[in-house]
Image (cartoon, rainbow, N blue to C red; front, top):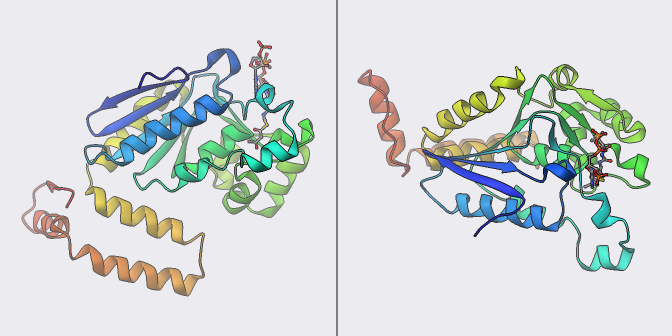
Length: 257
Ligand code: CAA
């Protein structure tokens, strides 16, 4: 399919998705939503793809949901259409997804970054949930995920004031995994993605599932889940290969099985 709001490029085992609505600062409208989810879902179904990188432009990762698209909406339409509900398909994907964020990640843009598995931030990144200034509130998980990332106090302040957080504050608060100079963001994100894509894909999926489980369950259930999945890794050929490669002092050549 030819996309109009995103660019896609496959490099080795990595799919790069670039949000591309420059005139609207990558605002998330229905078309961009459908295209991101279709591209990512396609990659998720493709065993030749081991990691997805989602990025925007140097100025803006995404400036939020499309305010002009939402402006005239009414409650019945929002509810009946379950506006933003399709993003649950994105969070259900099993392939690791890195958000490479430069510039503004506001509202739905911050939420989109948080729906990825981790965020690499350029030193220019700015995060915020400014929906309150529009007379609304976060609608794609911001009040929930931001709170889990940075804790109640900071999340509450961000949601109630709409203020932005710069990259340094976001790293201190645990929202982003690392900060890199803006001109190295994409290269570093692709390097990181290649590292992940070089691992066994089913084992990477198991790691992703286990870390995500920490947000869904109690510690004792999560630890039990982890242990069971750890046991399951011994059913894969890649466990044999990974451990043999270590013992034989050579790089592992995973078969993704
Ligand atoms: N939706 C629609 N259009 C947007 C947009 C958005 N979220 N953000 C920016 N744009 C458009 C502007 O309307 C403008 O278009 P025109 O040239 O046609 O006027 C164009 O992008 C450039 O924007 P600015 O002129 O405002 O650029 P700036 O550099 O002066 O400011 C900004 C940048 C601070 C990011 C500012 O654009 C801004 O505050 N944007 C809105 C941020 C926001 O409120 N996001 C939350 C949206 S609601 C939401 O996301 C709900 C949810 O939980 C999912």
